[in-house]
Image (cartoon, rainbow, N blue to C red):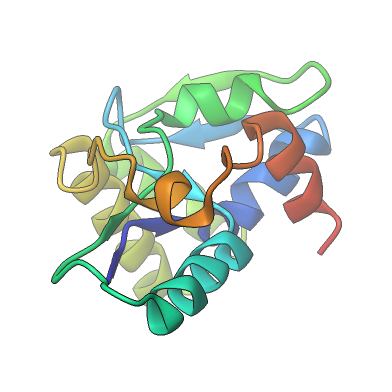
Length: 144
């Protein structure tokens, strides 16, 4: 089982937008297969009890951009794609440890480069249902 990217990984960015603050990212139009961690866990449980599991499952939600995430957050706030350097500096200015800021920038670069742009239906297929719609999933994550 290969999990793509938990929506919860982006909690800080989601909270920023929900608070009406600028939603800043450097992943450009890169996409990731965001889904809720609980959906990945539920799918793993299904695989563990499956009578004839596949050798490999590529679990991912629909591939979406950071702009897609931002646009699914209720409210008005600026959305801005910036360079990696500007993104790192923004995170540090917001109080992030420089090493964490560099890690988050590396994750954005990975998304921008298409590393997580998986197009697969393994996750909803094994669950036997559609994944939680993006806006609903974001609201769920924001409650954490």
